[in-house]
Image (cartoon, rainbow, N blue to C red; front, side, top):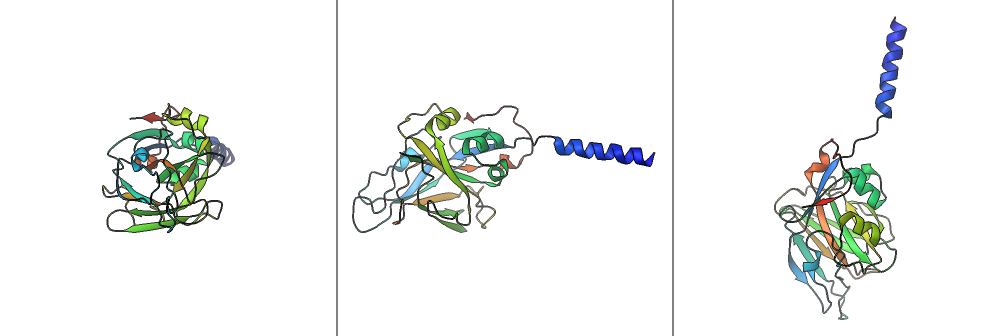
Length: 234
């Protein structure tokens, strides 16, 4: 009798391990404001970075049109006060070509317009909640710095299918960056004062063309299924 009970228990454990993981619901709250804009003769327009991804990117050029090496930059905020995309970990992982575990660890995402297959271009980031700050100096095609979980490239057709319809499909594709800010700093990503500053830098491939950036909301921590894959914009 004891043997039968053990056999049944082992069978139940095997069945539990065989169950597929449920997709975790997540919200992406897109930037809704900007400040502290620094340009150096370049065409950078931070307004096009606001809101849901639309395919319209604006270049942050290293040194702009000048020759003194001054990086162009802008600070973005208002996350949670504007556009929001509701999706799930499985759908976003499929789009980005990463594992669900990586997506579920991420709390911030950014997209960069590309003319050819290339990950997010070199850029310097500073995240803040008004009290604490966290700096990430990211260099394309190099080892990922602390705070960056993944980078990669998405075809415009896939980007449009997920976030679209896009206003512009002129870019060949879009690079992305996935960050883990909460796990590597004291910055409160859910603070109303949370901001993300992006600067072009003065090094190789340091002319990012951001299309959109967003905070992955607290819904990512809820362990329940959406019931429908894909993205919904509100």
